[in-house]
Image (cartoon, rainbow, N blue to C red; front, side):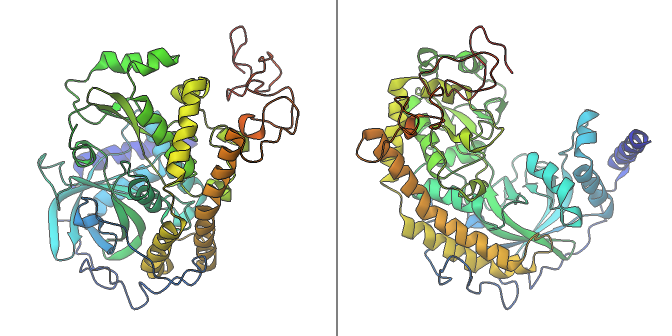
Length: 488
């Protein structure tokens, strides 16, 4: 009976998709506390965040770095959508029936027409779709009537040349487990401002739908051809892949042979033939310093791959909404991150590098270089500024899952991680070069920084993998996966 209900629901969704009237159904939206684009959302918006880790609510705002004014960090942006009842019913059905639609082979991220407002500007041919994967599934399954949709707004679906304030798409991101409401924003900002590495522009935005405040989001630049032109003006024409598979540029003339060689690589020689090695390991090291639990370091699935001129593929940051978090811990190994309890796979190319003494050393050297640029006070000042800016919007957010006290505690924890993470990395590096604690608790000849389990003398990078014991004996992330062993 349940399956019949799902099938009937899909049928209704398909009928609605064919017959929905795209004209004349827009409802005029009224922004919360006004919609003038200035960030004014009521008397309490912008009040100092008293719980932000002892911050005063002040702090410096980051630089513009060539971003559209839509992503001005000094502005809490107000967007509003007008969407017809029919189209909203369809997007709501997609949101609550993602898995059923996916199983039926139906696209569950379809674009829907909206009238888009920003200040006194209106775009009549904008479109919106849902975004997310695991965060989408989790919020629907756990959050009830507080489940929050995440969106991509496009200005180029009707008019392929369409742009708004210089951008063709904007992303509105807010997973249910970011109780600071700014992890992605801070992750992108730190990547760009502290490390000088590519990252999307981002600030915060309130979103109003059909006259009602829907929620607070990180408002961010969409990664695509325009993004590549901004961050690599000297090399703007390469192939860009999301996750190393899905093309985002040059779809009609991709170098498929090179991508095949990338995925066929299983040693340093083959990898070096198609990868910009130094740029890539430096990007991974930056993610490690950011304590990114859901990027390439720390999971292998959220990343972009860009073919940079004649230097080869480079990893680029994607989906930074798990930075400065990792279940509140700062002592996650920058090598053996999986030992703290995660089911995430390690990347094929990451394991190649960590198994090679020379390139593993280069990765450690990149950690040391990036650590030297870390500025605790500066990054914490951004936290204070962001927290003050969004305080009222967080308090009014109808999809907020936790109390304001919890929000302030999460912000305080974020400030602490900003100080604790570099301190742990410094301790790790002192172990690596012998200038600090390099103790070997299990006496197997590998100091704690070079051992994935320093309490088991049978487990270390020099151990022989023992088949069928359910243990990752040789610290390569996988138990019982070696020549002659079957994968467990």
